[in-house]
Image 1 (cartoon, rainbow, N blue to C red):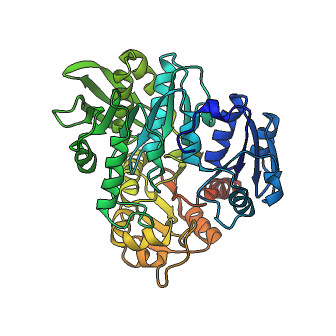
Image 2: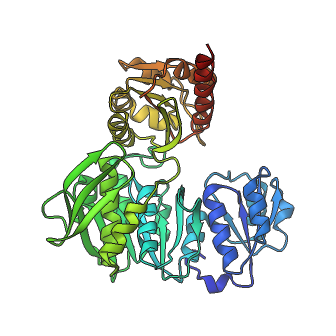
Image 3: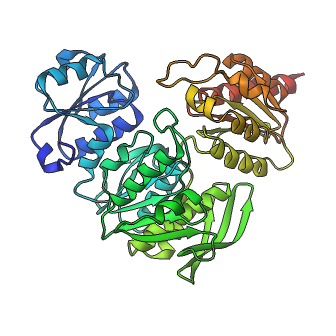
Length: 467
């Protein structure tokens, strides 16, 4: 069932367990646009559920084995436990069970699929590639981990031949995609709950590179040692490099990093094709844009239109996303949860803040990651003027005895452990001054504090102006 085609789904009922989740709802919308019969279940009612029902999906609230009556194929997300009654019933009835990645592979089977992989930068790079291809008039389909700020959506079925997909390596499921072309932004040890060693991460990325269509492209960052190692392996796809390295196929130079964006000259195989102009900050985003530009050029798209698309890119949800500006204090939310990501985010925040301070509320994600990168977290978070640490967001993990966010704070010069969300918010609200940048950081639910902080700042400064 893994390599089914879309034609084989026609006339069948596809049931999504956890249909309102960010990734699953996007796939359900694309499936509905193909005229497929879609049902699903979710733990609670929401605006997403309402939208899917409006599009024609039959969505039940709560999980019940009875929901599988008349179902031909079941799609489930990794967040769903194997003890779920609908998964158990599917196994009893021998109904094919597909992961989200397997279902996405089916939905991409009629398109020229372009997968964006890497330890960091996947969401932003796949968003940039989508916007760049849209500017060329190709109307690509896309399924991305975050929301495209411009369209307010994370998935869409386009009319064009291309399908851009964010390829998540966290559980090895990206091997299902077998894309026409792929980008690998970087390769580093992460997801330590699944990959015990750096070598196991290298092995899975090598397999991914070998799964690319031999007529297609493997686009990788020449500046990244991990991606370089993968490119040195034997496989059929044409290898195209990008970065600041003088031998890169797409070379960026004349780099200017500004508080709210950046520019760089782009040379394609030794010839200037124009200037990358970005309205999102950080050197890492210039590299992400270079990856998208290289892919677009490999696909025969005009450089001028690709660069125009990149210049129009407004960011992706939870990627250095400006949530509010109150009395000259900017509140930014970011998904960064690995030391490398935090390093580039805080470097960008420091430039963005100018003479102001960088104040952070960080929520570590998973006990295993916290334990594995304790020293690195402490070191990189000390780039902030103050980092308040919330307790670890467990995701699906059981606690590891003795592992707590307080261990990071103890190793820091500017760190403080405040496990209570409201106390952490109040502390930041009371100390912030005009010119400061406040960052809510992490892959858990810390983003819920951005709005609370913004409202608290408004109250504080209104009160002060009344005195």
